[in-house]
Length: 217
Length: 217
DNA sequence: TATATTTAAATGATTGACATTCGAAAACAC
DNA sequence: GTGTTTTCGAATGTCAATCATTTAAATATA
Image (tube, rainbow over all chains, first blue to last red):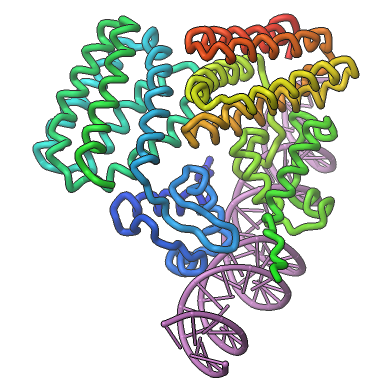
């Protein structure tokens, strides 16, 4: 009998919990995260909390200044611009690489995701909508052939997801999500590098800078 | 009086030591790193070693499999290809962004570096040559305006530096380092995006794949 | 009000301990 | 001798308790 539970380290679980709490606005940007408090709260040792915080630190979800403590990251307009720039760079490359691997079944899955986007938009469930957005882009990126690009993109997505929760009050901007992704899918279907490249750039700029331009961070 | 020592965390210092020991071939690729052994060796606690190992893990200099231990990374040919690809992507973008910031003084510094490269090549001091290579590219990348690209590049450089130590037996390939960088500088001097873009791509491909193609990893 | 001093809280780091798990050695079967 | 099972030691993940140092906040002083 195999009763191995594939025990994921506790620190990983805690890290995920903290991520979720940031995304659910249970923890706010700029909040200080005190190791001993969290240890008590999660009923684990300080060492475990420390390891979890280090994970989040590498995702730039929290900032740690030696001896001064750990604080939840805040995103300035400039930060978001940097992220968008990096995202465009990585995603364009990843999509290019994914193109030859995209098959019928993938399009089917992606299509379902866009359908779900419509549903979530109607429900005004922005959290789920953001998750779908992450899934959609992540799904394609993961078909690219460079594991390092994938890894960096994963980490970047966490940051994207994080500043998006800042913006869920500006729901009018989210109405376009569904259509945007349908268009993106159409571009992918052509399998034409130039069309895809152009659309990716355009898509990111449109969706992100739309939010960014109109509203204050 | 200010007698603050700006104490860098011990774990960072240990991490740097370990890096150096890998680069000096004191520690070999694939070696297992046992926490308690290192703790004794460096005369610090296991917790500190753990934190150091986590730092290296995020640089992909070591691999950690839960409950199985930490091993020094090994680089397959495919790994190096991935790194080269990512490097080309990031460096091209970074150089483009750095271009408008490049001034007289920068060229002077870069020129001195290439001079040093000649010296180190003649001395057959490959370790110093590799460091100069890192410095040269890093110096330009750090003039780009996206701090996130810089951060990722820093981490990538550590990986590049690491697989290079694999190759220092193939010193014939290193003769071209000096000339290659002189050429690269010349391209930068033109301040022409297209010329620079082309040269960066060409430079990385030439220097790296030259090593990669001829020799086995 | 501004400056200096005291104090309390949090972090970096240590020690020692323990359960669980992994892998290798030992014992066993074929 | 080869293959399988069992045993056991070593290493990791985790914990708890502790301490020095530093930081920030509270207090007292000028």
